[in-house]
Image (cartoon, rainbow, N blue to C red; front, side, top):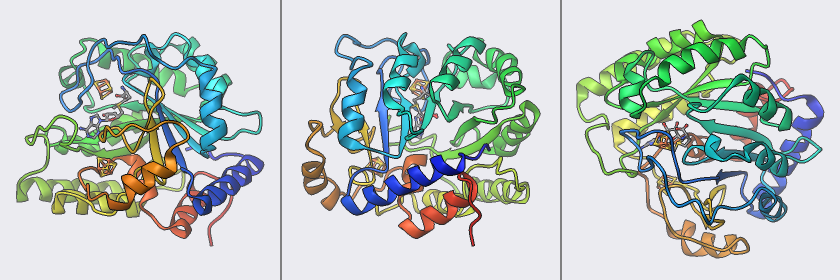
Length: 333
Ligand SMILES: C[S@@+](CC[C@H](N)C(=O)[O-])C[C@H]1O[C@@H](n2cnc3c(N)ncnc32)[C@H](O)[C@@H]1O
Ligand code: SF4
Ligand code: SF4
């Protein structure tokens, strides 16, 4: 995975340290639309929604000025459904290179031209969802032809050499046995890989969770193999401690200690602050402190271990150590 240049790294780490102390968010996820091109089995989105109240590109600058995150996810719904997505990224990204910007997308609407334009506008990482290493992805996502599109486009744009594409694979009971086959696909296409964990909070569906000792044994065997495949290119983007915590999350059926609202938060497509994408408590832009008091301070929810949490549950020294080594242009001790 491409490392961020030294000066930019220093700025991002500097702002992160300030935010940690000031209790401002480290990561903000902008859900730029609720509409989607897919109908995934594991998700509460799917198809078109009312987009008439969406924030405009220029509004995002105001949110950045108040929240000042050092990492931003641009997500949805499907963010590429916004025609102005390049302008949104421009409004989020400052000339200094902050924030580190991740576009989280299913890539159904991605083209080579859009990839170039988004790269030029300041996307540092393209997170592309992949649940199966073949056409079963289309069935899971309810979109025929999606896998073929990814199979043609991803290796082609990866050859440009920006090293900024990360397959994002959400582990469920359905794709559990494919964990290493997805890693094979990632190698074949010349891109990086990040695993995340299914949460039943979005849809209430229990069947996609890992519910039996056999499933947990398969998870452990697959992740043992993944650990053995790491090398110094950082192509498996999850830190080892994160994959360990993912095993515990499934085994214990939850992970307590969530910092939603404090270390990370969501901005909905119509501009409300929410603790996360699965807690629908809405606050105004200037009300993060109230959200921390009313929600985070007493939050007992332990129902997900999605990537945004897996980074930010950690202590600040651990977070720095892992990311300094893997994403930024320093060597850890
Ligand atoms: C909500 S989607 C939004 C961005 C885009 N539409 C996509 O699919 O990449 C972001 C990520 O959440 C994941 N996701 C959806 N439902 C989930 C669930 N129930 N538990 C964990 N992750 C989930 C998806 O697989 C995707 O990688
Ligand atoms: S996971 Fe992404 S692509 Fe699938 S329905 Fe949800 S928002 Fe859409
Ligand atoms: S554990 Fe935290 S991030 Fe996950 S659903 Fe609950 S409140 Fe949201």
